[in-house]
Length: 468
Ligand code: GLU
Image (cartoon, rainbow, N blue to C red; front, side, top):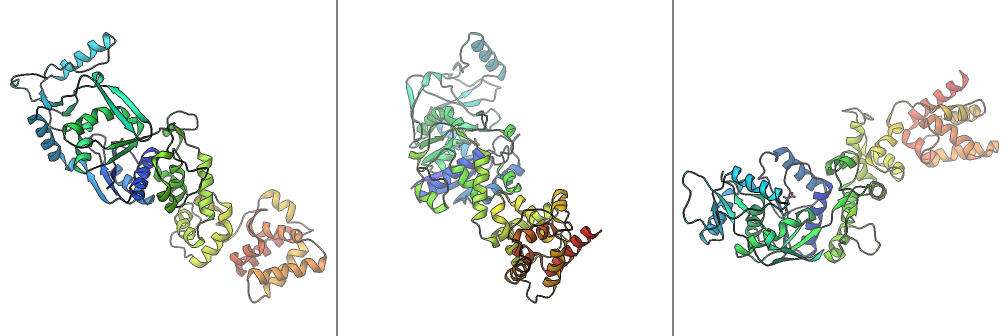
């Protein structure tokens, strides 16, 4: 059975690269009906925070990447690492190292001065007796000859020279375990079958392979995901703007759009761009993950977001837009909004909105008491020429019993037929009177949503603006 894990270090928010690793693990697990495990790698106690742990979990939940086990936390598992280290010591696969930080630093400097790659010289490898008065660290005995081959599911065969591998410290002298050791112990203890992670970890892989071996565990299969670059082709980072997943939530992106966008950062399936969740689970495999780095393209992400907004039911968008209406102060805290009405309003605007923030702003003239005119629109459409139509329309609309788009339309048609004018001759001035602008959804629907009372007030105001 496939068992995979997403293993973030909580030293920052869930970012695009991490979310993609989580997604690929999740998809691989779901495709193979396996288990997806969440493991928080918080051994770096100075940089890990509870706030980042919560924020990573929140990001995973928002993206709807549900896990089957965890979240495990490495800081809860120090006894386990200790016992595995003891086992390796007993078997002679690890040894105590009494070297002081100064000695090690000295060795490092000498190597660098000779233009060599710094490497532990192995002076404690074959010590016969402990050095008294020194608390030792524990080092792993790496093979010094031969090669280590990584058969990566994405990158194929990669060969590493063992002569370059350092005898890894697995437990520091203060008793805390190190990163490359905890990862392997956990993968062993959690029966991980596939390690799917960013290719920034590729250099750790040969070291880790020897630790799996030493622990008597069948080495998992590896899939190292290609790097994500910013539009300028350098590694994606904060310089490129928002990289945290929750920042996209806050700027009005839908999680479905982000998932769809992330999956295409490296993976492809013919030239299909839009995938449902079920399709992703069905089609996902490493055969279709490219070797070369993927470029983050904000325009494409925005395009996908607008696609998902257009194709979401209005009722769902109405729920999602409420926090944005509040945040953007388009509605006040405590102001009542009828959900059915809001859905109708959203339905007229979703085709025109690329984000939920844009959607919120597009609803402003439906919700506000009053509108401000765009100056050019006012001059062009609210004038002596359009005045008689506005007056007539206002009188006629006042008497219709059912203020619905179809009844409103009848009134418009009868006026344009009577005067032999085009719909635009009256629709544009009314549009400016209602929305302040020259563009909006269909005018009959706009009036219905604004409602009779506000429509009357706004026509009245337009008329007064012209007469004054
Ligand atoms: N904790 C590591 C990171 O956040 C991931 C380690 C792994 O996936 O093996 O980069």
